[in-house]
Length: 376
Image (cartoon, rainbow, N blue to C red; front, side, top):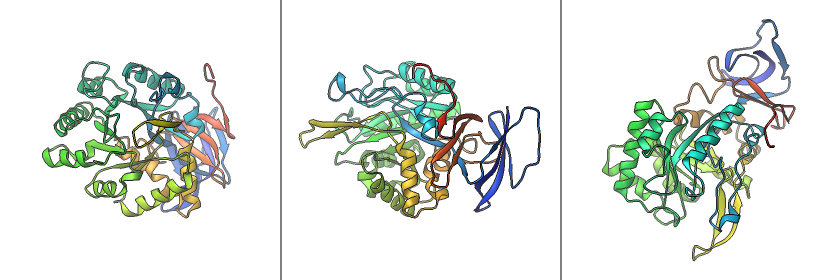
């Protein structure tokens, strides 16, 4: 299918320029001030008054649901297939959390395949908080090497729910992920849930000092309460991931603006922890409340950053270009350019999501879902 988006404003050549975008199948074929072309059956979309930006990439989504720390009744439901595209997310990475017992890597891979079948771009991580890591094939290295959807492994550190791995165990896990990534042409990352323990990122710094594993393998997340350690890590060349806060979006937006101003360019990413549990613990590590991450907070956070003075083209980089480069998906993902995947958001003047194209397919138009979803 060939589609032509006319009159959208696209940030190119360091300015928001009125542009036409030609989509052929799943890719962007051309972007220019005006494209005079006509093909049999071509659909023309008038985006006058709207901005076109790349689709968001959310690298931390509990697609099978999270939680369960307060017994079975507190398990968070799985992600509905339509939720990401309605929130402007056209690519995501699924993962497990505390629970790798009632949920499995097999469940995770199956859900990731379902999202791809639905029309998105989706990958996932093997493992969860436990060590040795639960896997699909029996080996972290084999999972990453042979399963197309699996691009890395997850583990937890500085958290009372973690497996309390040693530095040597983390080095071995990172080494396996690194080599598997090299063999399969994937990022081969160790995605690290970081809890509220006093050690913060110490184990990562120790692993870097005691091994030759590149810093790019280690991807710590949930770093809002570890800002100084995060800045140290970023200035060493690492990627740092901050989680959206559904309870106080403006406050988290201020922190992200600060992080972007202090960290080296391209090192900050943002994710949602969507459908993961957000438990509240007292000083005895007893759960006294629980919430859940929401994928819609990604766009809400971008809007809040813009409202606080950050230009839109800068605010979206942590969820487009930066994360695409970090996951070795750039320049296929994370930008609007000829040859890139046609993952496109059309935003109204007040930054409301009007339309979403995933791999060239219209998923949302006029704010309404355009595709049928089983069981929703």
